[in-house]
Image (spheres, rainbow, N blue to C red):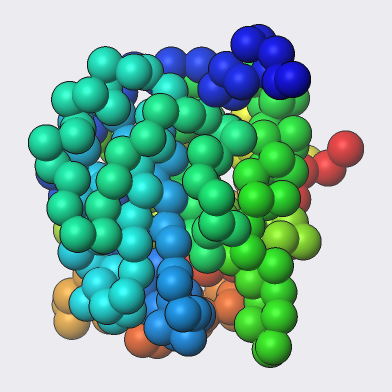
Length: 270
């Protein structure tokens, strides 16, 4: 028989701060990069893990994913029972809310787990184990599909600045920096939104510090393009970065105020 302790949700309660449209940049990226995998699946399930004190992010995730993959179902998961009860009136076709944590209380192996602003309160030493646990719950790779996707990261309160890590069943793949370009003085302003696995590594000698230094330098070199607008300056900056860093996306994403780099280039040094 399963013990009562073993059945408790895994994790701790977060502050629960949330705002409508806070995760729109992350959602937009997920739909663009993972939409094909969701469309191919017969019954695609996405999990909004730790949606917070209000269910807005889960409601919005369903809307945005269904625009590109109409069969997608979303499960909002929260460790605080009162938040689950408060979200229940917002359930609808394709959207349910469940009490749980890092164990991910769904029968299916999700094609997507989004954990935004969840690990911010955890110690850096705890991140690897949480990632491993969540990645183990993802749908496995099969038939040319790379499997499920875990998107874990941090953003500011109104969604202007994000940094997230994308992971598959095999582990971390990429890091994406995304911003409302009009709010940015220089790319290293995004350092305060680095996910827990990287935020304490923004120091000399660590790859993420070197990347942000080069990001700022490329931004400065692209200053003449500012007369054409912040977007054109950002695109030129990204082109500069491709010389020395494994940038995995291209102009179609750069125009959205994003740059994605391979995880291996930024991974912390042990």
